[in-house]
Image (cartoon, rainbow, N blue to C red):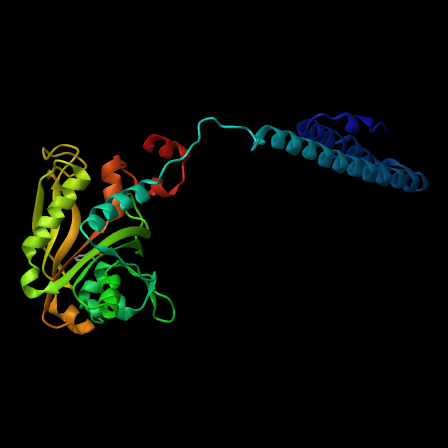
Amino acid sequence: MDLSEIKKALTLDELEEIRVKLLGKKGIITQKFKELKNLAPEERKRVAKELNELKERATTLILQKKKELEEKLLEEKLKLEKIDVTLFNPKPTGAIHPITDTMNKIIDFFTRLNFSVETGPLVEDDFHNFEALNLPKYHPARDMQDTFYFNDGNLLRTHTSPVQIRTMLSQKPPIRMISPGAVFRRDYDLTHTPMFHQVEGLVVDKKEKVSFANLKFILESFLVHMFGDVKVRFRPSFFPFTEPSAEVDISCIFCKGEGCRVCSYTGWLEVLGCGVVDPNVFKAVGYNDVSGYAFGLGVERFAMLLNKINDLRIMYEGDIRLMEQLK
Ligand code: PHE
């Protein structure tokens, strides 16, 4: 029998057709096996042996050819997808990442006002992240922050506020600091990622030197620095580590306060949390006769608003087209 057509197959489909023709249920060789029963015993033995050899040869040839064709296909594919890394691109791609860019703008504002920049570890302990911030164990406000815990009881910090505690424990008042950095919460949707960035601010000084009015003035100036001509409003709120506390809104930069989808038709966008430092926080770090205020903001929120990005997640996908647009 002629097996040469196996060698001539040009594609995997063609080869499969040949395989079915020879060895399939109704294939030529299969058919011959079925006809064995019509032969005389002696004859049957001889023909059966021949058939078995033929089947084996055909099978081997088909497998060889299959490998050969698959390799050829892969080679073609690789050739097609090859990237010439030596190719000169006269127009370099890339830009400062929107988060970095926004963070830099924020840091710039506060360092000019003589705030120092402090940092702390991403893996925190319960004391710095919660306890010293007036969030004792079993305090219901711990639920506000979906925490990633390690088996040893440590955790990924859920906010930059523990850096307040670390700074107060290692320095003496007066303190004027900000703390930019990554924080972690179990959250993932259009406007939340498990890792995001905050900038914390803390001012501590003699009682007569610190007031809610100072806080208000600094934050209003800051928000105008970031967003231009916006209205700013303080709304009473709650944080365990500040009392009184407020959330700060700016007039919607998209609709100028008229009401649109981004601001849920309220005309306002929430951008900050702040307040006067709770006495329990000073107690935890051993500070006496001082007063202070603190604030915290989410950098991603600012970056989304400033760059008009509606899905936070695209900021972490590294798509060059986004960077190109933000150049
Ligand atoms: N730590 C708060 C948060 O993550 C923000 C905040 C900081 C509020 C400082 C008030 C004062 O939500």
